[in-house]
Amino acid sequence: MRRLIATLLLVIISATLGFADSTAVSFEKYNGKDDLRIADSCYAARAERANGDKADKKNANLMIAKYRAALADSALQEPATEGLVKSLYFSFRFVPFEKNKRKQKLDSLKVISENAYRQFPKNKEIAHVYASTISMWGNERGALTSVKEGVASTVRDVATATENWQILGRAHFVLPYIPLVLSWPDKKLADKYLTMALQQNPKDLYNYFFLAELRFDQNRYADALNLIDRGLARGVRTSFFLEDKRGRWHLKELQKKINAKLDKK
Image (cartoon, rainbow, N blue to C red; front, side):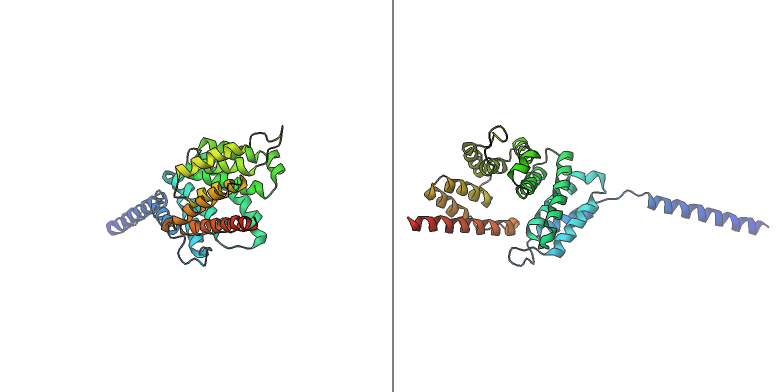
């Protein structure tokens, strides 16, 4: 009898301890640092195994998946969200996909970046992606549609709030002045803000390109060519290899356009 009682007690204790252990495991808090570290590594290596200016799809999908996984960690919400919107924006620009999926992907990027900006309005990286995305989204729907849906004003307000002079200057340059409808775009302010953008970040080749485009529009061809030469002289940053490679292509295309115009004179 004593042996039976002892055996039953041992079974009960073992079962209790086993239950306690399994409960501890199931309620263990998720730590997303490893997922975030992998995602960041993939983002840093986003130009590896590229074909021309087209990024490796497998690496892009992995970094997006890992940033999404890291979002489950409440302590990593901002860095994981920032990484996610940056990786989605990069993938939209550099990872090949079927043309009939462009609208769907752009719509998705707009929603995700908009929600991210609302959650972290002071994060300049998120704000840049959001403003860039809605600019593309609005451009594909036409200027008047963008005005009606408030896209143009949103781009201006986000860029102003985060001191993103590149996007603000670009908005003043490309958006049409429409009395009583869209009265704030101003080419003089485009000049001001695009000049400030280049001063703010002389490493970004697109700051040279956008200001050179403005100089071309102003018929200041020598100044435009000087900006192009300065941009091309900077080479390519290893940390922005695909971005700068495409930026150089834009600079060279604008250079050809200006030289062709000068040759006709």
